[in-house]
Amino acid sequence: MDLNRAITTGDTVRRARAMAEFEEWKFIAKYHAKRVAEIDRTGEMPLGKELARREVTLDLAQALHVSESTVWAIISETEVLRTRTPAVWAAFREGDIDGARVASIARTAEQLKTRDALAELDESAPGYAATHTVAELRSWLRRLRARLEPDQTREERENAVEQRRVSIRHNDDGTSWLAALLPTPVANAAGNRLRRAAKALPKIDPETGEKDRRTRDQKQADLLAHWLTSCEGTSTDIRAEIAISIHATDLIGYTDGPGMTLDGEPIGSEWVRELAASEHTIFRRLVLGPRGEVLDTSVLGYRPTEALRQAIRWRDGTCRVMGCRAPAHEADQDHALAYHSGGQTTASNLRSLCRKHHNMKSHGHLHDHHLDMPLQHTEQYGRRSTLQPCP
Image 1 (tube, rainbow, N blue to C red):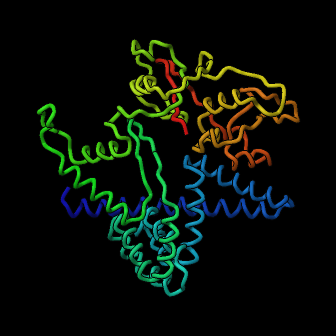
Image 2 (image 1 turned 180 degrees about the vertical axis):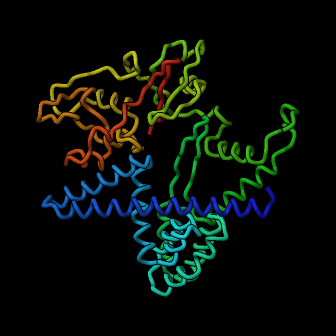
Image 3 (image 1 turned 45 degrees about the horizontal axis):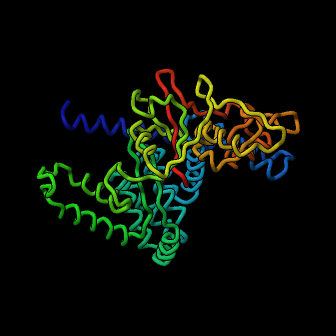
């Protein structure tokens, strides 16, 4: 296949994919609008209507195998595009631009305050988006908005600085992202310091005489870990709470069962053993059934004991609704069969639900098909330990 034919075929495929995304967005918006209109015509109380609307979003999310936030974003962005940037919506319909690009444009359109700014966005964005990558488009949109509404963007920048924070996101391969939301000048300064410090490291280790074979990225990562922990790599003395749900031979290294954090993220057994060696580590024993389930405990009352609460948190890991990643330690503990209807305060009748999904359940808008199974702490092929860093 020659280059011209490849370009033509690639453009046809790209356009077909974008048009398929458009049909998906149109279906979601149409179905949601129809169901919401039916709900609004009922005589239900305002809270009941709101929870019923959330159920519509949840049904769409599970039918399409995406998160509720993804569905709601599509609904919101479709409304913005249709009403504020009709030319962008038309370009999406024709396959000129895809969902990722129109989503970025919609977020900018939602931020703009003046009619003139929206008109310039609608006129110029389709052409730029059709010929640039998503990253280039987002950068262009930020520049465009700063030029069109400088006072608004300055105020938002000042407010954003107040939201600075640090977060951790776990990968599938035993690594995690440590992210810090910082003012851009501070982030640039930190990055520059890391680069300079990594470049200044000696090529030969003065103690061992061995050549430093780390890449520049590896050196920067190691330096950051050292600055934050005052130690090297995994020798960090982490303060952690470990719940052992495996045979003792896994802990001492005769067998090699993997570890798992409270929210279900797997980690290597060497970390469990390393944390166990720390003087700050607290051990807590959980009694599990043959399938890795926390054994049932009954309480003669509505409120579970603290021991049962902890067991439920370890068992569930997150909110039990499929796709919801709200951590169990921040969730409510809900009676599957209501206590006033004879439901017992037992492990088998309790499950972790985040406040949003708990409210939906309490008003009849969350059903069993929305729920996932509890977290399994053991697998058929081996044993597994569980650990969770202290707050």
